[in-house]
Amino acid sequence: MNITRESKNVGLLAFCQALGQTQMVLVFSVSSIIGASLGPNPGWATVPITIQFVLMTASTVPAALWMKKVGRANGFITFLVIGCIGASLMVYALYLQHFWLFCLGSGMFGSSAGANQQLRFAAVDAASDDFRKRAVSLVIAGGVFAGLVGPTLSSYGYDAISPILYGGVYAVILVLQLIMIVLLKFTDIPPPTEQELSGHVRPLREIASQPTFIVALMSAMIGYGVMNFVMLSTPVYMHLHPSHPFGQPDINNVIMWHVLGMFAPGLVTGWLIRKYGDVNIILAGAVISVVCLIVNFSGDSLWHLRIGMALVGLGWNFMFTAGTTLLLSSYTPAEKAKVQGINDLFVFGTVATCSLLAGVVYNALGFFAVNLASAPLLIAVVIAVFWLQMRRRAALA
Image (cartoon, rainbow, N blue to C red):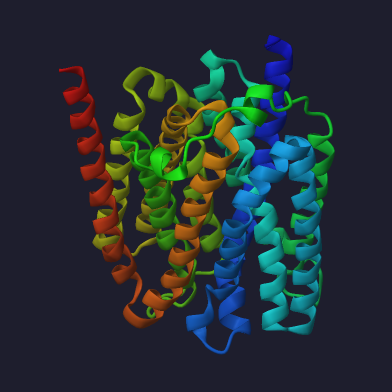
């Protein structure tokens, strides 16, 4: 593939990823607070974002199949238009103070966000074989922009459309989606090959029974689920802290640390994967996430929260990126759309479940119970990694 074309495509996709993740930062920084204020009680705080993740999950397979039919760029744009409508509805819902209308807009935005998750796979299509793992990592690293810009935009949007509190946040999201549509018009991603369109496709059961597929899926599912579980409960914990409630600037600052932990390592994660291997980076990510839980148990100062959120972000980066690159070796070109869609269906199905449970567990048992519940999932990933390594050694013996 032409190097200039490859670099241009990966660069544009990385910037689209940056804008897409900025939208997610904006949503994460205010959605739980809006849910707590508009909903019947604080236990409903994560319902809007759970609906977002449910629609995000539901859109994964249709988005993958639609892109296989119409091409990556046109597929992304289709779902971005839906997201624009959703962002507009959320602004209107905040004006009316209507909880369920806000949830509807959140769901439509979620379908757009679900399609955006395919940006990392689009980078694979746009890159040569030697560059694919780095391309995935670099596109994910586009979220560094989100960590730097997102909290500032959230603070600006908090009261930018007076008297619609938080309405400016969703107006910013709408503008970012429109910019993504323009950027995607300039991409030149190769269309599906004849082999992709008409090659032999194995039954899903056969694909899913591969140890490589199982560990790749577990890594992405649990890495994303635990990160989401801890992240969504943290702003609510800070906002409703029993002894010293934190203000919105402090919440935004903690979210910034978290997002930088998620995306800044992406500049080197691809190199680390090539040097140390997918499964070792998955293992490192699981261990780092466990350290996050230990930090959260050790105190509740602003620095504890910053470090804990940065660590769970770093753990996510390693587990999600390495899980994605490990997945690439589990399917043929003809199986690509099917496996990528199914993978994201399970990943974001887990995220949606964790989003709902974060509010329920937090409201019933508190912030530290949220952290404690995450530990067994991370231990399961560690066990799965050792199992895969044993299988590989046995195959070589």
